Image (cartoon, rainbow, N blue to C red; front, side, top):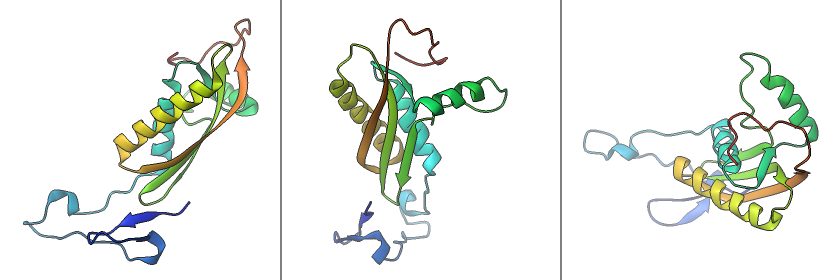
Length: 158
C-alpha cells in the first residue's frame, strides 16, 4: 500500500519521501494544526469489525478455527470480546486497507452483502478516523445454514 499525503501547497508525494508536515504553533494557529494524531491498527480493526456486523446477512466473522478459538476465549472472564476476530488492517499515515473473513447467512446474495459491507466499513472508518480506506477485501469462509445449532454471538446485530 502506498501512503500518499497532499501538502499545503497542493503537490502530492509519497509519504516516505517527505518530512512530516508541522503545523503552525502558537496562540494564533488553528487548533487542528497543533499536534499530531495517531490511530492504532486495533482501533481501525474494531471499527471495521463493528461496521461489518451491522450489515444484514452477516452471521459471523472469522475463519473456522478462529471462530472456534474465539468461542472458547469469550467464555473466559476478562479475555475481551472478539470484535476484531476475522479482521486484519494495515494503517498508514493517511490511508488504511481492511481484510475481512466472514460467514454469511444462507439464502442471501453474497455479492450484495459484500457490497453493503464495503460501503458500511468504508463509511465508518473514514467518518471516525479521517483515514482514506483504499480497499476492503472480503473472504467468505462459510455459509450459516438455518438448521445449524450454533448459537449466534451475543450482542450481534442481524
